[in-house]
Amino acid sequence: MAATRSTSADLLHDTALVSATAPGRHLLLVTDGNVAPLYRERVEAVFEGRALHTVVLPPGEQEKTLARHAELMTALSRLGASRDACVLALGGGVVGDLAGFAAATWMRGVRFVQLPTTLLAMVDSSVGGKTAVDLPEGKNLVGAFHQPAAVIADTTTLDTLPERELRAGLAEVVKYGALGDADFFDWIESNAAALLSRDAHALSEAIARSVRHKAAIVARDEHEGGERALLNLGHSFAHAIEAEQGFGGMVHGEAVAVGMVLAGRLSERLGLAPAAPADRLAALLQRLGLPTALPEDLEAPALLGRMRLDKKNLSGRLRLILWRDIGRAIIVPDVDEDQVLATLASSG
Ligand code: ADP
Ligand code: ZN
Image (cartoon, rainbow, N blue to C red; front, side, top):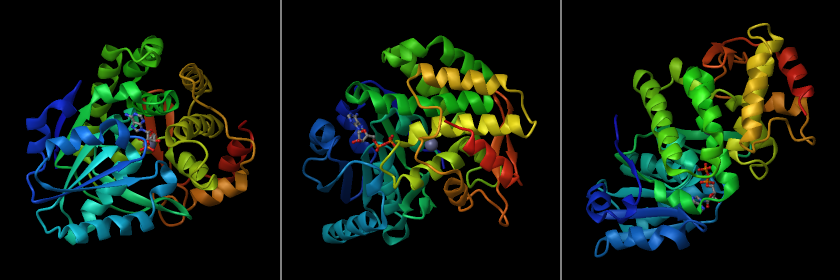
């Protein structure tokens, strides 16, 4: 399952490296309207002379739909793409999830290459082979496991990333410390200013350590029979927030920041953990410019209703990732809904 993975500056300029990832006859490049003006030509130049078609989607999670998936299927048929086609995703997690699902489903699966351009995609969504689209009912409800053949993370592309998206990516970096590595959490606390100022060394180290964590967990549990669920710390809450806002409110990383704090507060309420770790987590996220409380217009019962549809639940019971302390996340199989409601109601 292991993809070839390269992370460094200026990789998109390495023609030999990029072209070697996609040997097939037909190439579909998927990107979005913000990324295309910045990096599309560079990638297209690599494949000059080959049968490449580019689809430019409007940016944003609202586009991760079955309708857009159908559009990519049509683009592949128009290309005359066969089993040796390759789909390339140039952009953030939204583009990666959608293009990956297209690669997973075209003729039951063709080669997929990720060219992540957001911090979030570099540290999280490009690793591990999850692909999906959303339904109005909930996030990532339709999808497949489909490993990329290669991931090329050109860290120079982070220079153009909007501040808000950089911060959102940092939420997922904090997640790795919070769920399983207290030393990494300490490191992020000490390097928060450097990360926010896009110090290249700090960002490289954060990416490398995050990817190592994710890859190790995925290698032990690719299809999420157990341990991989820990990577969803904060995510049941986050997905409920995103769906409740119609995928047009908080960006994913922001919702994860709120969700992790809620998981910490719920752990405290259930007597699994003291208050101090959740306080420390909230303080770090705030320093990173991330939200730590629910937006006022969201109702606790509606959020709980969304959480009942989460993929991690088993036999109608709420299964959540909670913790005992920073670096010690646990899977809790049957969480009392009243305690969840109380936690949601007291946020903000
Ligand atoms: P994520 O990776 O956070 O899941 P998206 O794929 O939605 O999310 O990307 C976040 C936003 O950042 C989108 O609006 C996208 O167009 C934009 N974007 C992605 N990469 C870059 C980049 N390198 N420079 C500028 N904007 C970018
Ligand atoms: Zn996430």
